[in-house]
Image (cartoon, rainbow over all chains, first blue to last red; front, top):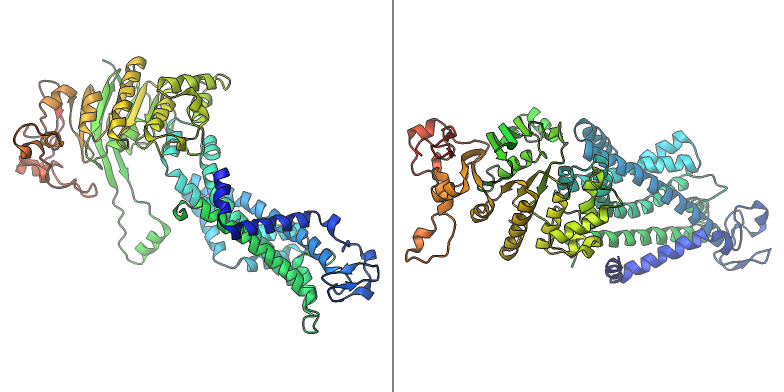
Amino acid sequence: MTAFWNEYRENWVAVIALAVVVVVVSAALLAPWIAPQDPYDLANLDLMDARRPPGFVGSNGYVHWLGTDAQGRDLFSAILYGLRISLQMGVAAGAVALAIGTTLGILAAQAGGKIEQAIMRVVDLQLSFPAILLALVLVAVLGQGKVPLVIALVTAQYAYFARTAYGAATAERQKDYVEAARATPLPGRRVVFRHILPNCLPPLIVVGTVQVANAIALEATLSFLGLGLPPTEPSLGMLIANGFQYMMSGRTWISVYPGIALIILIVAINVVGDQLRDQFNPRLRR
Amino acid sequence: MSEVLTAASVTRRFAPRITLGDRIAAALGAKVDRRPVQAVTDVSLAVRKGETLGLVGESGCGKSTLGRMLAGILPPSAGEIRLHGAAPMRGRHKTTTRIQTVFQDPYASLNPRIRIGEAIAEGPVAHGLVTRAAAPAMVADWLRRVGLDPAYATRFPHQFSGGQRQRVAIARALAMQPEVLVCDEPVASLDVSIQAQILNLFLDLRQELGLTCLFISHDLSVVRHVSDRVAVMYLGRIVEIGEAGRIYAAPRHPYTQGLLASVPKLVLSGDPAASFRPIPGELPSPLSPPAGCAFHPRCAKATDLCRQERPPLSPREDGTLVACHHA
């Protein structure tokens, strides 16, 4: 573990990215305490303060460092709360997709035969068309709200985990230590959970990190298209969409600042994921 | 002597896996090779109580496949494996704990994420041979008996050398209190100096525990060192089987003679060429074995009879079984 961290530390870009992820996640977690305004409390909002540029001092005495949006919400507060929602969706979808995908992938590798063919062909099919398309259709069918959105994101993403877990498990199953476990013989459950699964985790952790970022981007896309969460609790994608109509009139901050927040978050998570992948891949070891 | 582990006309084929892609290619008229590889053909042998049977042959002759079937890890395609008359496998799964295996590569046969103490204890605990509470004491005892410090129980495999790992693998197999130990090239991946240590450890423990052993190796001098009887395999069949001393002193089958002659030795006599005579040619493909005696393309004594008719494994006056028309 210490050795792992020492190797990680050698890449300063990855260290900065990790720091950014930590700062952004804690900012999102602590939003109710650090945000100057509760953007969900309509009583707090004053339409007189709407669409004001960054640095504007509002009627209630707040300094709106990043300006305000069309409802008079403080953008900084809205972004913090938006991050919260985006991260919630991303992590929830990533975790559920990881659990389902890993189960299916290892089941396919373990069962073989018809079950393997059935699972992996469905996975192949799903990987062959865009995740956003599937998510769009599902959200349209299931309706809006957090749970339908997570279901849509999971359905769009579990296949990546299933393919990764299947590949890793098939590779591990060939190895002598699995044969040694069968030769003892250890119970099948123990072979899977104590021997095969832990050795499949490194690639899954990497895919998991990247897929959280993808889930956040996907959620933002859906929200931008108006199919995500209800506008009363805007996520980052919704904030960007809300400001979009004001882009041409010069009030760019309404869209641009949430956009920057989204980009920073996704890039940081991806850089961390890339570094983890490099470290878990022995062939890239120096 | 009573027979503990027997193989009766055991055959193992490996069919190539036909994938969806292959099926599509076949439907479109491409030729897909569906010929199975016959790794082991019609082998019958018995391992007797308390003895060590050495199994030798070139790489690819099927000795590991036969070993895995005898160990109950791999089901035979035809024929039967029996341990005291009962099958060691049900379907594709091994059911007995009375046969344990030591594998060739101790770097691969230990799970890198499991501490060696747990690796040794997990089998006995899973099968109720020892309680979870008593397991640490048992692990310490086994580590001592294979010559390792009991304090190593909390270490991971990567913290050990190859020889130490093989000691752990031996402890893991013996902690299951087996009656039969199958050793599949247990020293082949170790340095020569370490090989001797591991072999001596193996010999000591075998005597102490009264184990019945199947010892697979391509190294004739190693097999001579440990075996009571020796079986020589060529292209999936046994060509000669008998007392180790007799086979090493007077090999009958031309292949056994060739194998023994091809062992490089330090030359003390004047003629270096006499000490090292490789067998000409290569092992034929198991996909298309030669007709008649499988060894005839490489055999100096081959006649038309050898090319047409396969010699049966038949007994000689001293009890050795040989499959050759001319020996």
